[in-house]
Amino acid sequence: MKTAVILFPGTNRDRDVCVALEAATGAAPDVVWHADSALPACDLIVVPGGFSYGDYLRSGAMAAHSPIMREVVTAAVKGTPVLGICNGFQILTETGLLPGALMPNAGLKFVCKDVAVRVENSQTLFTSRYETGQTLSFPVAHGDGNYFAAEDVLDRLEAEGRIAFRYCAANGDASGNPNGSIRDIAGIFNETKTVLGLMPHPENAVEAALGNDDGCGLFEGMAEALA
Image (cartoon, rainbow, N blue to C red):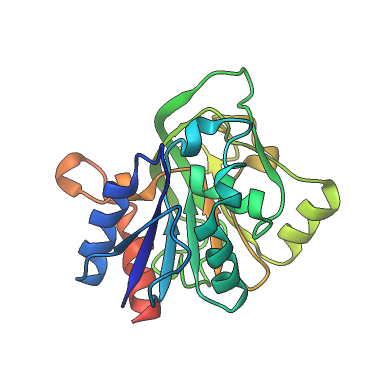
């Protein structure tokens, strides 16, 4: 399985994602610079977290128009799976690969802590190692994670099983939202469920020795599905 990780000025979770991908797949990803105009042959593209272009103008807005993202969009439209984490999620909404927008957190404060998320759909290449309704713990670290979309878009996401994760309390109840995200949404899929964007960081929850390996299921599930 071949993977590619997109790197922008201001990205700061590329190393974390590369470590998680290599552990799951047995092969180091190709790291692709934002100014490149071609992608290597790959089975999965990851747009990692950080603060691309310093979040200038709007989080993800400038990165969405970089040369490499034009290639990512083309590959995604053709069916190559794409995972966007935190700033990667913001970038994917800015490109139009995912609907909605990520606004400043409720309370206008940066949030950095572990949060509980509930798996809403386990029947995808990203979530097959989890059970629907399972509660996981992932770190978050963002200032613009407040997901918003129009009501008709939200209803369509619900009806089509395109909500991947919701913020919840540790016992799975509907509470614990860290940023004001509408309907407690923490992650969503595109129409074909081959593109996933989420604000929490599963790549920072892959080491049992560090206290949390809940993210392993996501990376191992992708590796199994795409092998």
